[in-house]
Image 1 (cartoon, helix red, strand yellow):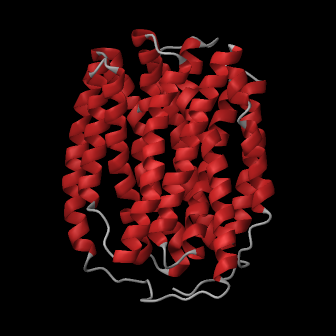
Image 2 (tube, rainbow, N blue to C red):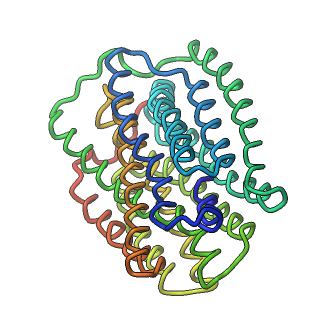
Length: 366
């Protein structure tokens, strides 16, 4: 929901593009620093954070951030929510990995990620409705789905202890250094993807509301929601097809199709522009699930750490990219031109993917 708040904060609080983007950056940087460390600690100790508490902490931080007009307090609430976010993903990904049959890891990851992304897609639209009819402070009521979700997950987490565990007690890999290097390349392309994807999500509402399109907040929230729903479909497709046709193959094709989709957004207008937004969301999300599964399989004894890097470091670098684009937009006086520069990391993704050493596709045994 943070990107939807930015144009209102820019207007009501007189924030620059840089200071507005810094709110998203604060969330992502705290999360990026914390997640790999939390994941590594959990892998070594065999104990991760309580998932329900993590959801509760994030919901409170984000929902209550709209009640303050103090910039410092808003930043602190965003950082508090980021800690909940950081604790959640290594624990949740580790649980999903342990419960996933090897031949269906891509599918299970896509189901898990998609369930969160579906709410992530609906969030801006629901928040937009609340803002349109009751003002920005009304978004604080969205803490209640967080409370309900935390209670629901608490019950599910207890039941999960009785499910079959598909992870070997000790999984030893040959050529571990080569696997680590391949995993590092996957982390790099995922970080570059995040810079473009988070940058687009962060500033798209501002571009639509305050730019040439001059559409309403409600219409912008609907567009962002549709964009994120396309991403949900992309996540499901990416996980499922990577199980069938290979992880690296699908990662490369997804990035390859993402390049023209992103460029079209800024070289056209009207229907073609919106089509580019939706297609880029689809292919960027398609690649995300595949990269998560690849990193886990390359580092099978460090699933929490690998997941923390993907969710933490990658999204953190994406958040830094958002602040950088805001700074460039302030400097050159054009948000659209600054956002177009994110085509550079998108173009680099399929090129780097070629050099990832990953086993050729073969049918896994369940």
